[in-house]
Length: 395
Image (cartoon, rainbow, N blue to C red):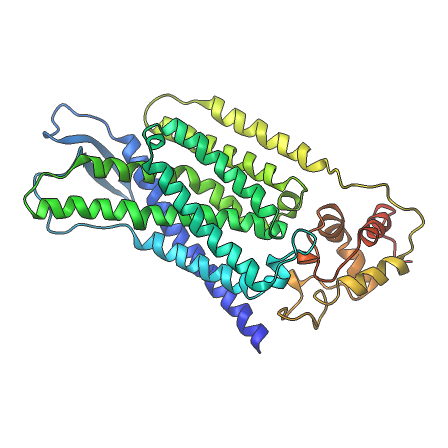
């Protein structure tokens, strides 16, 4: 009953995280697009930075953005913050339900670092808090006055974090934590900088004072950071479905390149929306980097010469000992209510049917079993690879 309840909790939290994330990313993309699409007009009022006409859903819209604030505070003001808060909250609880409750299976990998459950969770929590503190201090330092310098240093720190996580957690958990770190920075930007600065401007107007433009400038910088971080965090969210990335021995390098690709794609659209030309070279570089990743993931320094003459009986014995605790009609591994993704490996027909998945996840990327929970050996992985390479015959 507990396993079934946890499965439903995982599903509900994941659905909530997706719903809130769509709302947050949608509003974020829209406002950055709107900011980039503003144009000056000869008849615009004093204090207006720019205007934009929009059409959607059969209607026309007219928007204006003030350089600092309107002459009078409007009676009704719409705030955009809860999407960010609930995205982070649902994501944190989802990570807790999957990676903290199932730490022995998903978070800890003894081949990487032997940790207790408490140590692993402690590392996770501290790293998220420390990552935000370091980022925030950088933004407030003299380095924060240069967007280019801040971007370079910030990217270097994220790459270092990606490498560091691979030295502590399982490969899958390492990618997830990079996404959690980026998501924490983005949500904290909203909660600790963007919204407080906007509230200061509103309070100054209520007090009859002219709003200080420096607060709006700081908020805009953090909002732009969130815009460029969105695509990398989305990749980290979906990466657990693609072990060819996180399962590579240099998975942190792959993630670093993906972050560059995401930044290039966002930069292309931001420049285009600003009316600074269609800079296809950014998309070309992103495409070439993607092709490069395909070839890079094909190279694996762990690959060894496969054995010959492996029988199905030998392969089946390894699968029975190392895989069917989870991949069975009635899993016996604690915390697993049903066979993951419906993959069962109890009969010869089932084993042959999923031979390609076994090759990808247990042989090529070594991401299964998660955290090597059943202690499969390198020799056993090699044996499975040899059987599959010989045609995965069951007779």
